[in-house]
Structures are given as C-alpha cells and as structure tokens.
Length: 175
Image (tube, rainbow, N blue to C red; front, side, top):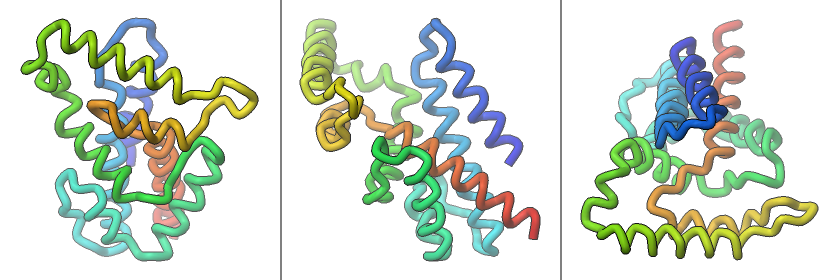
C-alpha cells in the first residue's frame, strides 16, 4: 500500500507543475491503482494474477466489496464521475497504461499536419461538448469526447476507486 500511495503522490506532484511531463502522472496513477487492486484481491485471499487486465482483477473481488468500492467512489466525485460500466473504465486504464506511456507511437504513422488536424478537431469538439455553467461539467457530453480521444483514462473515476480501495484495505489491515 505504501508503494501505491507513493505513486499517487508522485503523479499528483507531476500534475501540479507547470512543466509538461507527458503521460507520467497518468501512468503513475494507473500503476498505483493496479498495486492497490492486487493488494485488495490478495487481502480477500485470492490470487492477484491478472497482469494489467484490471477488470479481471476487479471480478476476483467479492460482489459486496465491489459494491462498497463503487458506492465510496461515487460519493467522492458525485455528479462528476460515472461508475456504471467498470469494464469500460478498466479497459481504458489498461489501454492507457500499456499504450499511453508510449504515446509517441500513436502518432508515428501520422504526418505533422494530420496530428495537428486530429488535435484541433478533438479539442474543438471537446469545447463544444462542455458546459461551463453552474454545473461546470456535462458528464453525458464528456463521454463522447472520451470515445474519440486517442486515450481516455477517466481520472476522477480512477482516483475515486483508488481512494476507495485504500479505505477498504485499511479495514482489512485493522482486522
């Protein structure tokens, strides 16, 4: 749990700097989630072998545990997160962890003009999809931009479940 906490702190630190550290913060957050998930699977007395297939690991958890984690995480970022499809989230995290850390490979087959066009198109769609009113974030519209991005990693859901797993592990440690 200490290693995972250190990775979460390092990812947060990178995101608060003005420099661009690329995907480093996201990759560290996903690595922390993987360690926490494996620790919880182990705490439940199961084999934590699922590589980066986080959904496979998720399914190893007891049904009641999964429900508690979703409830905790949903409250943490209420109105700004969506935990209705854990498989989609964890598949995205798998893709982000295994491919986003090599994000330059995605653009290897694209020309500079194509990279600019794709970036500008996604960004303009993203701006159209967001509402910057009192609700600040239109979750339904943001789903569309995640589907068209090269990488979607659902940071609030990732953080919410990581924090939920940390809380659950503390219960196991105190037992």
